[in-house]
Length: 139
Image (cartoon, rainbow, N blue to C red; front, top):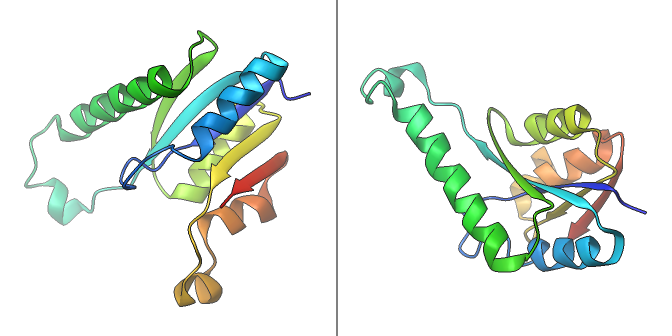
């Protein structure tokens, strides 16, 4: 049913992927799906970037890719997993990656909404509203 799945992972979370990755592993086992783990790095303001080493963004991206690969090995015993790290706003980058990869499903978890989420909207809510494919949001 789902041949290609995108799983956005927030590596800043206390236990990244603990909810979404077991579900993704189950979908791999059931459907033989290809899974892409995605982490979105926030853009660095120019004022801050000028004080960082020249290769900071490349190094941060490399570290994030290594963390995603370690999570994939921890939760999934398969070669059907790839990793992707993008820079930018969370929900636009998720939507762009989903479109680029032509995924059937975006599988993500959401936190308990706070007041600011009701006023501004959470990333999960924005992905659900604007995605061109199915979205499964876990709580």
